[in-house]
Image 1: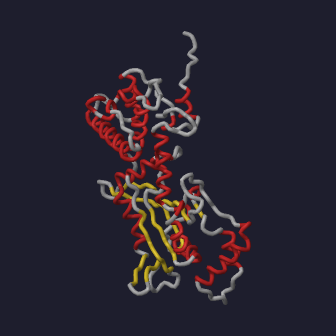
Image 2: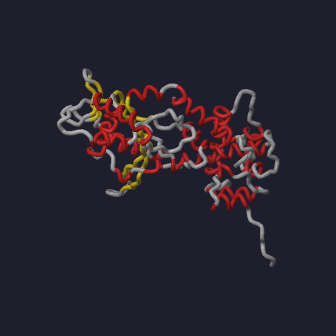
Image 3: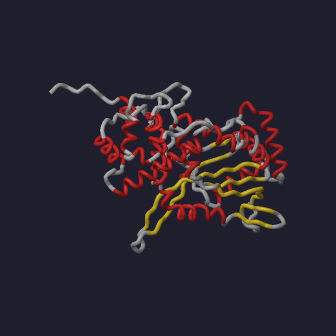
Length: 369
């Protein structure tokens, strides 16, 4: 038998070349039998009634997301693919996505768009957070909440009233748990993101009265063992607020006899920044959607979550990531406006998701599954 020299280029690129599933130009499925085999390898059996029902739910959610979140005025989703009565069999989506017709209004592009969103929804729905969100939230957030004290006269503090190291706060926020819509948009917008790497699904934010107190919060979290530094995901850390090298230079220049207030220390930190700005060492993780004006300290850490099982004494354990943000109040207010605002961030992210899903990449690449 002669040697077979034909290899599916895009499939190999996806396996070992770094091409994500959402960026594969098109599928190569020519029959319903091939489509069913592809679906089974993916994890669903189209001939299984429960699996088929689940897939149709993902189809409906994907179509709704595209229609409500990504389409602009005057654009419409072709009913041949959006209406189950017309599509009849979801396997046809895979066949449409394999055709050569990649014009902007082709069913191939719309089939690819639908499959992209369905893919993201499937992975989000099978994330640990979906099944254990109560246990995750309870075990990660309660230790933080137990350290927050509110006094009607003096305000909010991190630390109990008799703790000399307690830190005055302007705000303490539990980061809203990412809605499905927000998570889908993020995963569609960022090629490198996958559901299990969505590290900021939940988190906490401290807003201090002073810049110096930002570093005091960091120290408090470690001293009180709210954070275990070995569990920090180091390549996710950000510090665009104040350079650590200059902060240490100021601290090392002080003596114990200098009992300075946080406001006075802020003045020293500001003076050092003005004097040695050229030596400032910030830590910035590139985010194409964040404004260069957005300043904060952020890290991602993990906590061991324990879920009791049916058998006595048995439990299911896993590490789950969450985000910690710390910022001073003056910077917090600046972050609320202009290009640094969260609203503008989400707009940039949605524009990117739209281009990627609908095959409108500025680079001129074709529709992608």
